Length: 214
Image (cartoon, rainbow, N blue to C red; front, side):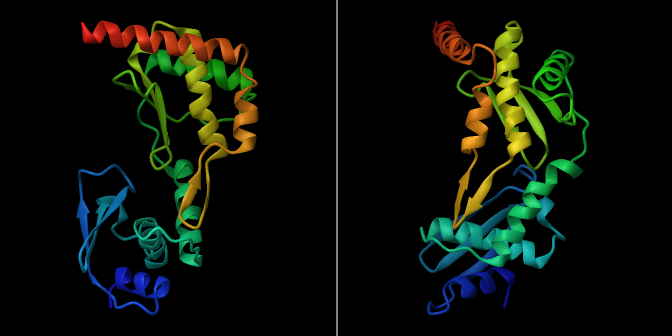
């Protein structure tokens, strides 16, 4: 019995185990995975970075995907191990990517609002307008949209938001994840003129969409 089949059996002891396969793909980002269910067939497509990971953690990954696709609320020790593993990745991820303007923004925000305690993550320029910033736990990477490069204060505000994700990480229970805890939201409001900057971001996005449309 494969680890995926064992994971299914632990969650659904009364159900017949479907046909289960696991495929590894180099197209997925590090430690990403997705699940496909068609009839009596279940396929998990996982990033190649999952190769060689402990079976207990892999079972947690599979069970996390299964409870989502079956829309049930269950939590197992393997799922706890999986989330503990995911939350540990930023500490061990290689730090190789940077950008001079983003690096300046990081140091401003880290020094002013985090007392300089945060380790510099990977920093990269993102494209597009709809997503001004992202934080990837698996690679410890902050991405900031290129449209913010000429707006230092707005860039610092978005940088602060993404670094809060690095600081607070996330909580997970029974197939649901929370990335904006009350503590996160309370700290986010500490950024000077946060409400004003939020409105300025919305105006900038609207303006850029018009430019790109024409």
